[in-house]
Image 1 (cartoon, rainbow, N blue to C red):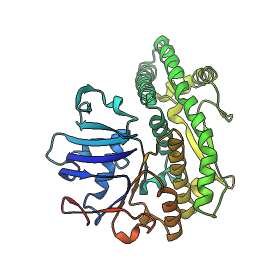
Image 2 (tube, rainbow, N blue to C red):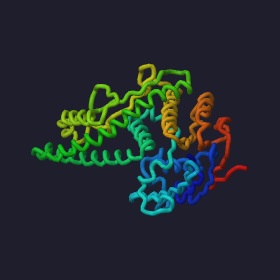
Image 3 (cartoon, rainbow, N blue to C red):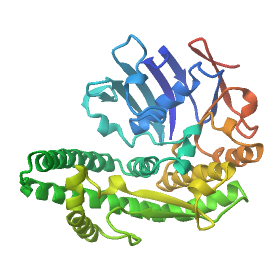
Image 4 (tube, one colour):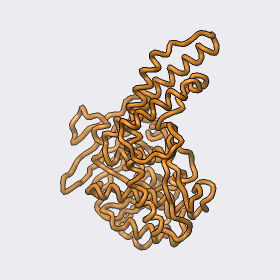
Length: 377
C-alpha cells in the first residue's frame, strides 16, 4: 500500500499543492515552520480523520478559507483508489470515493492505513491516560474500521448519560427533590453494552501487542526492560484478561450500580472505557515517572512499531510517517529505528535538516519552503 498522489487545497499553510509520490522512502526537508509537517499530517488525516497535532479541525483550514480539501490516490495490489476529504469546521465533513458523491467520511476509513511517529509520541509514556486510550482506539479502527462506529456510539451514549447525571445532580442538590432515575437505568444498559464491545476489543489488542512491544523495545535499546502492558479497567480493581462480551457487560452493569450514588453527587460518569488506562511498566515499575528520557522514547517507538507489525500481519504494509522524529533521538536510536522501518512499502519522512535523516533512509527528497514543495533532482 502506498500513496501515489497528494493534492491539498487551503490546507494549513498551503493554498494549493500537488505531489506525485512513489513507493520507497520520500523525505521532506525544510526549516521549521515552512509546512513540511503539514504534508505528512494530511496523509495521516486521510487514514484516521484526525490530526496528531490538534484536537479540532479548525486549525487545518488555511486562514481566510472556508474549507480545506485533501485528495489522495492510494495504490493497493495495483488497484488505484481516489479519496477526497472536505474539512468543514463547525459543519459535517464530506467525502468522495473515486469521484462518487454521497460517500460518508466513515466509509473511507481503512482504505489508507498509516502508522505515524512524531515528537508528540512521548506523551504515550509520559502523558495522560487519554493519550494511551487514543493509541489503542486508533489502532483498533485502522485494523477494523467498524470500530469507528463503536467509538461513536459509545461517545454518544456517554454524552447523553453525563447530561442526565448532571441534571439529576442539580435537581437533587439544588431543589432537594428526588430525581426520576428510570431513564438513567436505560442509559446504564446502553453504556454497558457499547462499553463492553469496546473494552473486549481493547483487551484483545493489548494481549496481541504485548510480545510485539517487548520484541521491538529489545531491538531498539539495551536500556531498561523488559516492558509490560497492563490494562487498568475502571469497572473493576481486579486485573482483566481477555473476556467475552457478555462477561464484560455484567462487570460494567455491576460497577455502574455500585458507582451510582457517587456519580449522582458528582454529575458525571465514573465507570467505563473512557476512564480506563493502558499502564506501561519497565522492570515492574511504572514507565511514567521512572523511565529515563531515552527509555521513554524507546517505549513510545516500540508501541508504534508493534502497531505497524500488527497491521502488516493483516496483509498490507501501512504507510509509515516519520514526522521530525529523528531530531529527538540519539544516533543509536536513529540507526535502529531506520533499520526497522526501511523495508516498509512506503515511508514518508519530514526533517529540518538532511543530516537528521539516517543514511539507511535514502530515496526521493523534496525541498519545502516559501509555500512550495519541489523535488530535488
